[in-house]
Amino acid sequence: MKIIFTDIKIFAKHGWYDEERENGHWFSVSIEAEISDMKTTTDDLTQTFNYELIYQIVINEMKQTQKLLETVAENILKQVLNFDAIKSCKVKIAKTEPHKMPGVSSVAIELWKEK
Image (cartoon, rainbow, N blue to C red; front, side, top):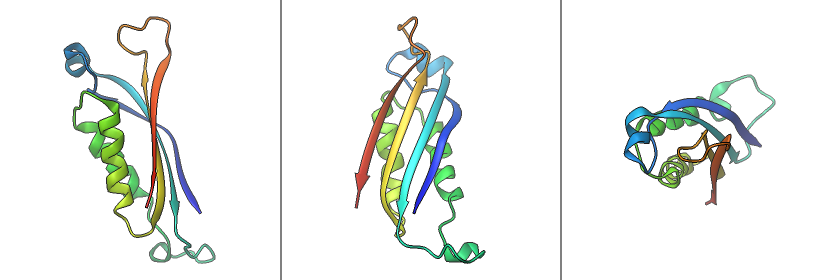
């Protein structure tokens, strides 16, 4: 089973240039996490994985200003993979309208790891 978040919109202050870290801009984060076999025939949250935990990791990490999106993605991956139930995770972070790149709607990095 996979948990998939598509395009979490977050305003943050990541970037190589001082101006990017001072002014901030919009990012889009997508996550795909494969979880070990969980019970899907029950309506009991304690029998499955609470995906709000992943969402909170994304929000917290995006608040921590970094120069490189690779650093942010790696931090998210490490934390998500710390959950016993998670077998693999893919993180994609897109920076919308990147600094010094007129005409580019977004640029993204994507990292993937498995246990």
